[in-house]
Image (cartoon, rainbow, N blue to C red):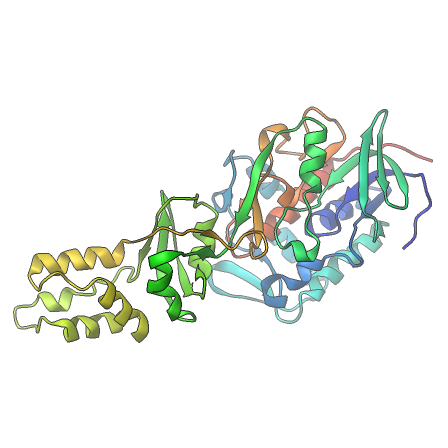
Amino acid sequence: MNSQRGRSRDVLVLGAGAAGLMAAIEAGRRGLRVTVLDHAERPGKKILISGGGRCNFTNIHCRPENFLSENPHFARSALAGFTPQDFLELVHRHRIPYHEKTLGQLFCDGSAQAILDLLLEECAAAGVEIELRQKVTAVGHGSGFTVETESDSFGSSAVIVATGGLSIPKMGATGLAYEIARQFGLRVVEPRPALVPLTLDGAARESWCDLAGVSAEVVASTGKQRFREKMLVTHRGLSGPAILQISSYWRQGETVEIDFAPGEPVYAGLLALSAGRHTAAAETALRQVLPQRLAERLLALDPPQGWSNRALEAAEQRLHRWPVVPSGTEGFDKAEVTAGGVATAELSAKTMEAKRVPGLYFIGEAVDVTGHLGGFNFQWAWASGAAAGRAVKAGIRD
């Protein structure tokens, strides 16, 4: 897909990922001349690896409460304007088979390629041009915008920045969106890894990491946030959906509390007068709700301090509020998304346009809006992209 130097377009979209392609589709449908620029050799690379290759493309229970941001209300307008049902209509139109997993998560029956094909077909139908291997080197602003790449120059009256965050750099992630925002004087909330495994060091690592591969349903909590899902012990620390969820809220030095038996009174049976009160009985009780190795480890690390009712009740409480202080995270290499980004106070919630720079838009992961695990970040990509694509104004003509 080669371009001619100095071409003018109504809209330039930087980034051929989920948000950028959706914005291009919506703008193209309105008759605007749209070009998408991406530095990669193919579009939608992160789409293809998402959901284990099956693309968890939305969540039917999507609500503003499923997103983290400095302004928890910012996402409401865009999410209301483009709902999971709106994306499902596209999925149905393209006859893509899909299924629902737990907690409202929707996945393709086959490959994530089906979702990328949907987006590319819609782009083609809307007259959108996609220019690949176009690494952006500069964005200028005068009477309109100029975007310089290593090989070309483009002009437009509007630029939509959809270059994502810093997560999974091996897939080509860069901080370009933040550089552009700062260039135009827009505040950026410090980016950090989110939906990422947590690491353990020292005694905590020695206590747990030899159990790598063991998993259990737990409640992980920090502050007011609580997530009940699976936790997985790894060679470096803790992972699994419950930990990935809580990682978005965790800060260095804070404690994560683990409820190893949510809703289960583990030692209740030992409180009966006729019950045997000894280590074997406690282990049997634990193994009814936890994998054997995990039950044995918990008992070894913190056995009941005696067999009185008070001691058993105290041991019960510790099982439900087990403190862990992670040493850190696995970083952007293993993070599914980036938290932080262009501050929402700088943008219009309805259009995603920069308030102080008319014609400049930021969407998707580039913005300080981060979804929970389970299809919510894709829904934010679709919704924020649709908001910008529907709002962007017509401009330059050759």
